[in-house]
Image (cartoon, rainbow, N blue to C red; front, side, top):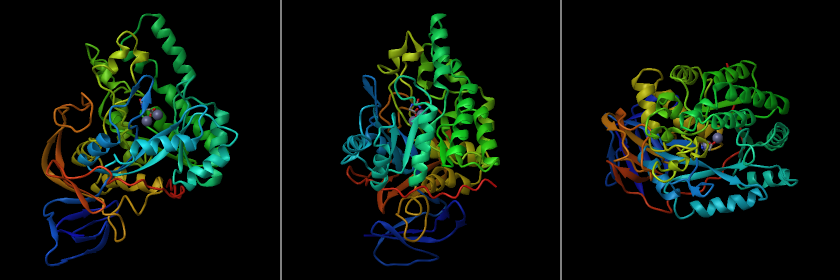
Length: 464
Ligand code: URP
Ligand code: ZN
Ligand code: ZN
């Protein structure tokens, strides 16, 4: 199987060039000016950007939450991702209490195998450190699961204490893993939630009001101090506030081993959304919550200055009808999570490149290259280079796109960015050399997606 991409503008995190790309089997085999080969399939990318497929390192597909499950499974979720230009995901498997990580990994393998339409890896959510943690973690790493998430929020279910985080950092660091942290002060938040409910404050906006930025910033500060003590790398997921960002900035200034991720919802949505009438605000209930408008600009600056390293989605879709409604009489019962796996590249292109906040190279870096590097997938994923997997998106910067639940491919009954207009759109998506999306049509297949064993953490954290 061979395929030639001609006349396009190749954009990587480092460069922009006008070359042709030859794909043989599932890899990029040549990148040169004027490649001519008779009789092979050709894509004419004249006037288009040719970029590495997006790498979304924060998704929750087929994730159980109480009595419900996140609406996208590995089939619908990965297909929607592909329509939005993402060709690799790393999903969060969960080791529930009383379970070994190996058992959780098997469960997630069963969820994904035969369904995933694009390549995927797993992180492991750790809810307790069993006596066998050291051994279990080494086994995970041998299996290609090299990052582990712990929660400082959700007491009684997911939250672990600081001693546990410190131990996890030390052990993970010793074996070359990466700890990802959900940084919110769970005990403080719990107290605020109880007080709000006792005062009859039950509407969705109290989800945000009971989790003020200080509860995030304090947790981030504690987490960075623990990482410094353990001398182990730390990745703060879904950074939502300027307060938390400031803590990361200070950590980076001190050359501490900390990395930061934000998500489009914190760059585009605000407290105005969660305050929408008729319970509509429930569509925007996720944690950490939406913030006041002025945080958005500070987060964008964090992306420009390298204080933030990655934009991922935290895709965790629940329907408005039936799911979010569980919390009509109590905001604390609204399932936490929002959809977005399909919209990340578009939103970052519009808010970043079109609004002239970031360069084309930085766009590619944030949505593809840097996540691939941090999570042990580079250079197989995250770039356009000879020998890399041919995961490629042909992007038309002149094509209009309007985000809507009526046209999106995520299996959820609303879109958080309904009506948002984007100048720029995906035209063709290749996953390992195979066209899976073409002009809005699905050409992929189930079972195409492969599980990715990931390398140890080896990203050079350079804070200068
Ligand atoms: O509300 C969210 N973010 N749900 C998904 C789980 C998490 O904390 O990432
Ligand atoms: Zn989280
Ligand atoms: Zn998440």
